[in-house]
Length: 99
Image (cartoon, rainbow, N blue to C red; front, side, top):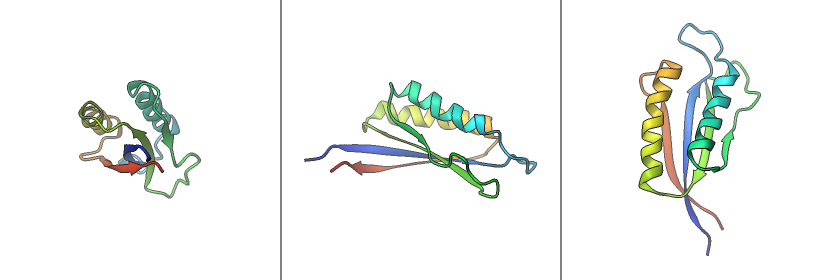
């Protein structure tokens, strides 16, 4: 039988409130922060080389399903609010089964 994990997806804007592009380093920082916080879990920046006309970039991580991990993402959402000047950044979570 396969293992069950939880995928967390973070959608962050590719443009600031003033319409200027967000520096790509901000996306890389999120991936590095999460990899560090999640003890080496695989964190992916799905929109590497994203097109400037896209409205959001996707960063995701597949991790063990635990209350500690959930709490980490709840706290991290607060950091995203400040870093990207957003009222409610999307952090999406769902079960993933590895076959």
